[in-house]
Length: 205
Image 1 (cartoon, rainbow, N blue to C red):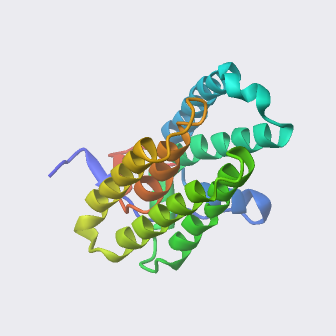
Image 2: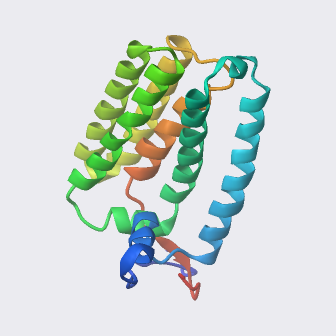
Image 3: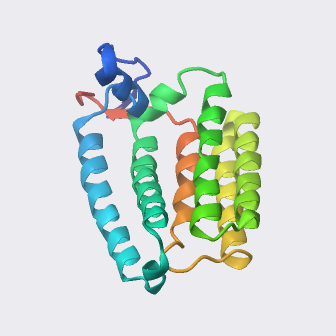
């Protein structure tokens, strides 16, 4: 047993109003390290994605609406992958055994798939429907399987979704990041319960 680490499920008190609502959405009690990684890791990744999109030849054919959809989804996925990996988010979103809230959060991201398929890919309903099926099936499996199987099942569902997209529904290089970040954020990041682990004596806020 590691003597230098401890698990803390205690959720800090949050303020009222919009500030408290934002803190609860992101996960109350975020440590300085978590906050720094989210800010700087998100900034670096977002800049790299922006460069990839900007240099893509197909970008010139996009409308302002298509460009806006891609940019907004990119920012959401980059931030979401990092936020859902934090101890604060794990502690908050897995504070109860009830899976309805987590599944509802995952289901809300069907809008991402509809936006990409219908607005960016020219009404490619097959891409949207296949990925919606992969997302919902994977999410239900992760939530329903016993705790010891959740992480490997999430990894398996992530790999299946990735291979299906690469082999059957390949996207151009400027958009190829969407499936891996999308399924990483939701199946592996959001749905897998992990103990909020800290070093002994580490301040949580």
